[in-house]
Every structure is written in C-alpha cells, then in structure tokens.
Image 1 (cartoon, one colour):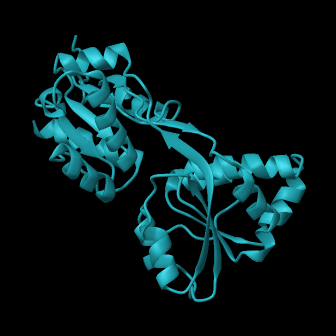
Image 2 (cartoon, helix red, strand yellow):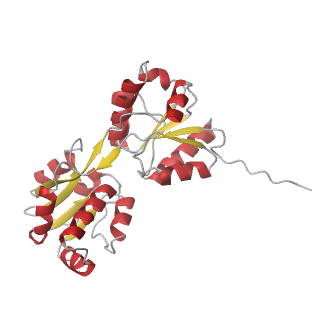
Image 3 (cartoon, rainbow, N blue to C red):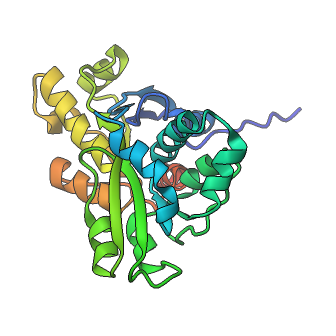
Length: 273
C-alpha cells in the first residue's frame, strides 16, 4: 500500500496578518489553507468620518458629476450606506440615480464590492493601483467633474493631484475614517516577543504606519528587534515604499497587487527557502 502525503507549501510557517478587523478573512483563509499558522494583528480600525455632511450633500448633487471614483471597498460600502438612507433604501431609485454617472474603481475587490449593489463599473484600470487609473483613463479629463469618496485622513494625495493636472475638477468627500487600534492581541504580541513570526503582511501604507505605532506604544524594544527573523511582505509599490521608509526593508513583493498576488508571492518565497 502506498500513502500519498501532501505537504502544503506554507506548512510550519507563522504569518502575521495586519489588515483591518473584519477585512482579513480572505487573506487569512488563503494562507491557512496552504498550511500556514495565521495570527491576526489588526492594524486598522474602520469607522465613520467625523461628519456626514459633505458626503450626504454630494449624493444629493450626484447628477452634476461626470464620474464617481472609488479606490477601496470601504468607500463603496459607506457611500451606498448613506445613499440608502437618503433614498429610504429604495433600490430602484438608487440604481436610477447611479445610472446617470460613470463609475471608475481601482482594484478587483472594489469592483466586486460595487457589484454587490448590482452595479457594473464603467472603468477598471489594468493595474490595481490608483496611479494606473489616471494613466489609462478612458476619456479626456479636461472639464470633467469627478466625485471621490475617500478616507477622511491620511490618504494619498497623488490621485487627486494628477487628475487635477489633467484638467478635471475633483470633489473629495470623507466617506470613512481609518484609525490606529490601541492594543495588540495577546497571541500576536507573544509571537513578536518570541521572534517566532516568519512573515508579516502589509496590504496598505496605513497598516505599516499603524503597526509601527502599535509596537512603539505596546512593546519595550525597538521595532527592528521583533522583526529580525521575519520577512516583510508588501502588496504593492506604495506599501513597499512605506515599508522601506519605516522598517528599512521589504522582502516579498507582488507582481499582481491583489490578495491572491500577495499569497502567491509568499508561497514562492517559502519554496525558495
């Protein structure tokens, strides 16, 4: 009798996931299914902005815009939550209002979040980063009025700057806020202290920044001490830049700036070791 033993590629690896609470399941599940021990350290808390006034007003004036741009699932979810309130959750009226404006989204997950509302985006750039949206925009931007629901603080300004340089009028409205949690889960803290983490994943620049704040506020030694034996994995170029700026290095980068791309890069790194 022969026994077929299948060894998963991440077997024996401990991976720290730093996505926002409630948004880490896809990454955690993917890594766990490949044999990894996943420990979650939420480095973001997502919540409402300090005021809904600007977002609510922009929804009332939606017909005056040419394009609506979303760069995150959070932006989509909070925008439609407020829209549902204004339209008293009448889906036919919501779809009618949305049908009058073109919608661009950055990233596959953002597009999927939009499709939950039975809406197809008019444009998805080929690369899942904001810069690609400007470089591949399907229309001449001169004179176009663009609504951009986004994080209230700490977001990148490059997208708005580049759209404006090409002649667009961009109206930014806070749709949600991302904050730094106050504490580190006990399991994650112990793994860092024991230097038993093989890989730490970062899916945004903010998670890198807030991770550093969390360690500085909750652990006694310098950050470098806890990551001596840990590979740093980044989902995309801007996140990688922040890793280098704040952590001094990045060890695993992706060819495709998605969760699937990040998992694939970690597997390839593991197989090379």
